[in-house]
Image (cartoon, rainbow, N blue to C red; front, side, top):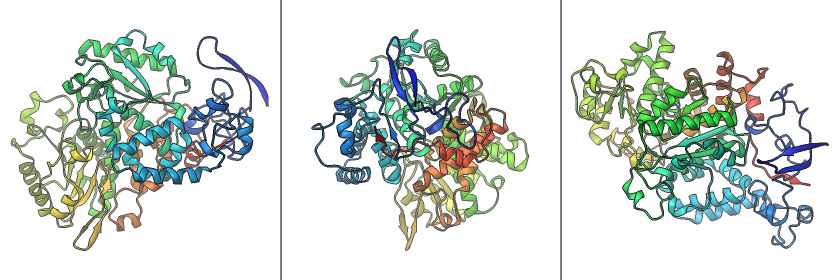
Length: 607
């Protein structure tokens, strides 16, 4: 034990504390950081909490030693009825809890029983958010152990409805709100957040939430949900994650007229005013949290999403999940589907419905992988990929009027207005839906795909479920059981002609937690396309023959932490290979290293 001076918060708030020294803690024979040992997700483990075994005693520090009523109100250290008799005596909890003792497993069983009583998904979402705010470790234990059941609750599709009604269900802030009112003092606002060692920020301006459009400030549900998955699926420590909503107004008249709306009541700021606010934000983040903080852009409108990614990818560690994460997980599904279809990636012809962030992002990553496999120029690879937008097939005669991100996909062809006519003319082997418009893969479209493909690959990727281009049942029924189907939101297994088909879910949650962990454990300073390709290949490699026999093209989510560790290892390896990793020396076994850095939600024993 050593006496260390701990500076907490800002100004003159100081505490002298006895703490376990973690300086000499080693993993794989080397310090995880130059100065301090790192814990879950590579964050400096000030309290030695992550390196304590589960039977070792730790001290529940907040600003001072938490005890009594304060301890029960601290979500990071609260254990509810799991506090032992000794802990109840030591921390002045006598009388504040019922006399019964209940371990974490029993608490989990009770909560899952209660959650299953709710018939409305939004009620389950609210119950889970309440749990996160009162008992952090139990929330993540529940989510990790029941990931397939609870993922649709804390994220898509339920999070979409939660964002729409966020003003009504708002209880307490779970992240930072930066509005135009804070222009000129964003750095000061960042310092108001109690945690200092932030490793991942998920930020949105709420302009394009899933397929639901402009939800303004109420888009906060997306960063909160994404970061809970960074912890549950990727093992990053909750305290290292920061959800942020940038509120520049909303053009949603319904919200502007809603008395419960929690954001700025004005039309969206655009142009220079918007650009200046984002520039100040990006500068302040780097100034406050350093070069290696990962900034994930989430649900920005197309015009801003591409511009922000292009502008800051050379100066910050930035990642856009809608463009890059979606592309990576879909490419992984395509690589898996090839095992069922046969042939190589270059043998395929792709047709996309939707030419926004997701559509063009996926198309570009497919072209990059195709170019990598064939050694052909990327321009040649792009010719195998066709896109349809709201005006029809993107062809060279439309080039002058196209947005810049659509121009690489304008090929020589006669203009075609409808998707069905495009399918009949192009004869794609793989049909991708990224339009955000439901029911657009009609019976005629699916039947056309099945007429010239023995196993048509159909991905209806738009979220939430109501915006999916078609359902799993429609895809399997209309194709007479021929289709290889995946979707963005979950669908139940479908029985057709006595055979059960299990639809794949191309959920970004397969990719971004492992990608983020890989960037952090390697100390990466930039994100590159090669890392996304590595993540896709790592995910596809996790699909076994047993999975293929069941018709699966993605591995089950039950193994997601193992999958994330493998993805993290491949991403970290690529960061080291490209000379973009700053955490040295390079660990010998990156998979084991990634697993050792993962946050554990098990309760700890207190002195």
